Length: 398
Image 1 (cartoon, rainbow, N blue to C red):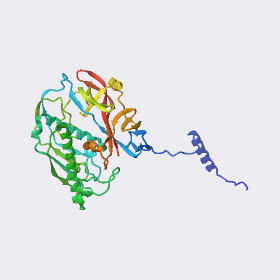
Image 2: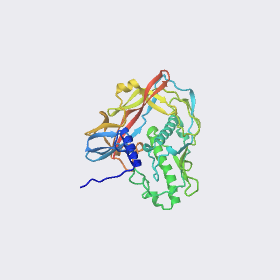
Image 3: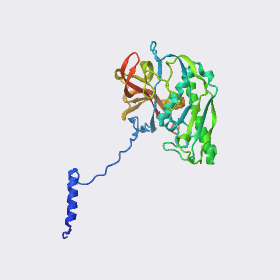
Image 4: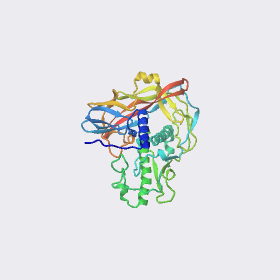
């Protein structure tokens, strides 16, 4: 077969040479396409009892064990106990005020068309909810329960058209009625259902947590929500929110050291606090203990349980970051070589504490306390301390 002769002009030769020189300078013979970084993926255990958990992903693992469980991680701030005796942190005769809370924007824990709060999916919503609970608990524990006779909650839904679309990550709508939207098909009525049911479901969770913490049955009246369906310009956070109104007079107490700070979403002035030595709950090896640590108040007036960096290293407190080896041994669950605890049936789990992701999980285990962030803190009576903020982790098996 004869050779094929290709004739090139001087201009074409220059272009080819220029391209070759550039490619060789870059160390490659052909241009490469930059691939977009892939989002973290759940680790696959391939139906084995050991593998890894990916703390950068939700879910953290799939096809776990013979039953092929999906594991999700639930985080919860561990409890901060009383200040240790002799560690006075505030002035006496302080008033506890329960202000009206506007729950909107990132503090509103609802995916589209859903009505139950999913605090795991919305960290700001979880933090605000915990702040609200703490304020009610302090108010009630200081004798204010009888004054809580007119607490109200009201929802609102903006002008967007409601529908039957199930949000990503869920298998079905979570409406407590027998049919979605209680069988309603008119969009105005469906929108009203969202406004009212979101408020009532939020109140239900709030009442249960307060009952568990104080034994007090808080009555919350559900007001008819504001419905802005189809109204021009009424879209967004201003028209999609929940208003919780305690309607309770300020309560004067002899000592305010047990108060928790308000969130940035709370109306009215913030109460100022000082970081102090305190007892905190610490979970390790499948059990909980009270240990001496710190109540640290950050720049946003949030209260964090913390321990010193030296204590953190002495206790061998884990850090859950990126991918960590995990294992199921019988009915025990280990993460990073640390025993989390006994895997338990969801029948006995505190429902208010976990996000169900649209379906009921079968088992859970935890909590285990882990290091969340390293911060310096000025502790009253101690000075500057290199601290580690703490969180608790639960593991849910679906």
